[in-house]
Length: 487
Image (cartoon, rainbow, N blue to C red; front, side):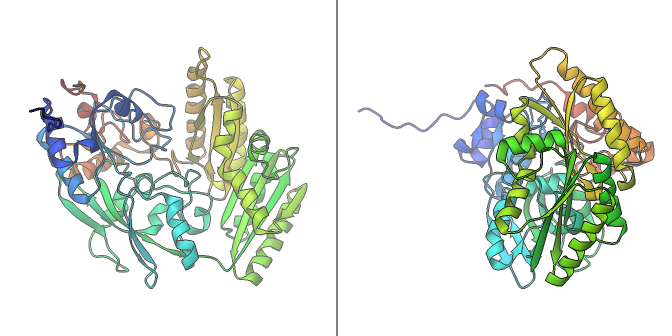
């Protein structure tokens, strides 16, 4: 008798066999293609080596993965959509990669209390699309919001243009269900106004996967504003645009968003999507105010006055929802627009005091000219969050070295101006070596102690955030790839 079906044999690798027992075999991938896809993120950094890739669908399955990893003494790296720009999701030392994209359910929406429970794989923009007809939205709006996940937003404490008024992700997360590295489940934070004890929720947001894996998140819902006005101000110099931003905030007006783009970026956007930006301006400022009709009209007049005092060459108010959407489409597709210029870009993410914006921007232009690198600037000007894009072709010999050299100088220029290393992209591997230039030895020691309190064995996303010599995970991240991983 011919046997037409045979149960798949148990994998020879004990780790893979245990993972198959915990998850359906088709949700444990150990092939070269899947490992290659998860060996890098959207950053310019490479060198990642992925071990088996798992796709859990429940908290229980994440627990099982963590316990298996502990039993086999293997590190674990959580991964969302892979849109990170600091190398935070790059797997070092062939860890188990836990992709949370299949955990993508909006579990509960509580409009009365303005809270939603979501799984980490929910796409940022999808949540707002589901909420808007109900009169609400999720306020943090990263430029990658069409693809980035809420778990990734929590990991990096992501921001976005409208976080000037509403705050970054941390301000919109009330509680997090977390699977710790030993497989235990902990609830950090709570739905009450002032949860008892230490703010472990706040410690987890922005921890970049080094403290555990979020499996459910309680997010705050923001009511849709009754009125919105969007303005486009054009300037003959970037300094005038930056000064306008500083003057608007100093006047007491806090718009929902203040975004600046320089001429090279505006030109790239116009060629890409035709948003209606003036390509002859040295810089444009996209300003948006929200609130009651009378209030937003007052704010628009105030910004108009300040813009004219700073030599604005044109001030335009979006006359329809379609025009407003076109202006924001241009801003949201800025990074994609640079593909017309060169195949690669290195996007920075430092924060400087608003009063130093113009000075640091002038330094950036000088730095890139000296290193013969092209830069396009687009940034959250209202909170001083700079995003210079160094655009290049990595196939040209010596280019990547010049790009990294220019990037290092930009980071140091931001720190010397009194700024910080990251506003929303995280530290990852990109800014590790600069942590000692921002923090003292005692600061780094306490950050490491916090990490060890959650993860004594340092198996959660090792080799990230803390610099060499200050991380309990140094050896874990650099150890040899275990034999049998590629079987």
